Image (cartoon, rainbow, N blue to C red):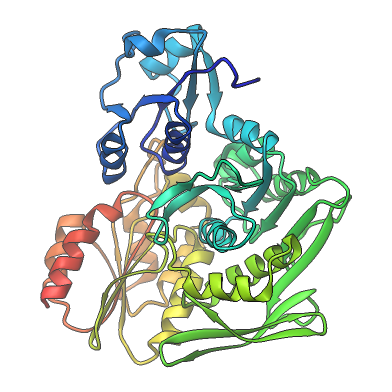
Length: 454
């Protein structure tokens, strides 16, 4: 499908992080843009300030008049929208309608797409890659799954750049619609089993994504992933993995800075400064350095970009940082991500009590990975569990936050968001974490205010 005749874009689910990035991109390219979302949010507020029309009620057949012009309007929707939503039913009968992933696929046909896939780390890694490239001689556009602290946006538009960085999402097999010339794969821990059904099917999905890379297309992947190398040119990476083709050693923390030695075969870059703390972020930086070196960036460009990278909102994001009290907000919503978060906290603050406030995301994910959640949350000194955030799902009998609390044991408790804020008044020292991918971020500003007061 060509975009030549399209004058305006209408987004159903415009407030989502990926959808809003596309909305901003097309607005910046001069198209008219409007859309629907279920509830107002800081992100929809920003879209409205940028001149994008957003409404919050299902208008059914009565979408804005200009966008009822069938020939010149393209409708984009997210799979998170219920199939019986009135506007979606109407436009599917009358308009050209594409999923977000299909539109990204079109964009990768008109630029050199650099995909970043993986169960964990893809948002930070894609944002880091976009930042390093944007500061180099190559430049890029980017479509990100989070708000970059450097760009203060989830989209970067550079009409003259050859490259587009795209977060390649495995949910709903969306990444299979992309046509990348190179990619990073950070992790393949099973997730979204409500979509894939089995672990084997999930892994097969990633293999299919890898196979989209034709002969000599580059695939940078974490060492040890169960991938079969077909036509693509593969480069493995890993921290303290000397069998990887690119590996990092001597990760250390010195005077508030993280450093890493990077080994490209016999070539060693000593003490590369990383803008973000944490073991998992060192791995992300290793992947980005590998990709950028292969694209032709200089050592100086890569070092400078990694050092100045400020991260992504809700990814190991410091909210309060004092000698006695630390508060970090993080998007972790899978046991492996929680494990990486807590291990990094223990490395940074080995003597401090760690309190984690976790909101499970999806009934199906909570069911599928219950044992993993219990194991990792039990490593906290205190675990506070919020009710499960359902997103697109109906409740599943027997799958509850109460059950997580019971299995974690005495260090765990169940609280509502309101009770968490009351509890925050009592915390005077230690490390506090808010963890999860649902709407737990809505309590973050008030948490920050109360902890700063303490």
